[in-house]
Length: 64
Image 1 (tube, rainbow, N blue to C red):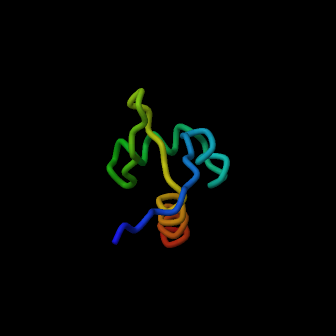
Image 2: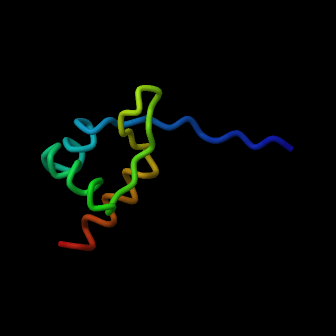
Image 3: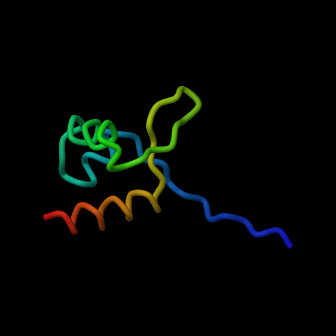
């Protein structure tokens, strides 16, 4: 049986920063420190799925 994954929106750094109400530099710092782990697109740019954005929001709310 083939199970299809749901189609997910992909967020780039700018869209993620807007969603989280932080700067792009903050996102880059979190990636650099290993606190969040982006997927990479075909140009090797960091991107985030809807699921990963939800996880990042939970993580961000926990550290407040």
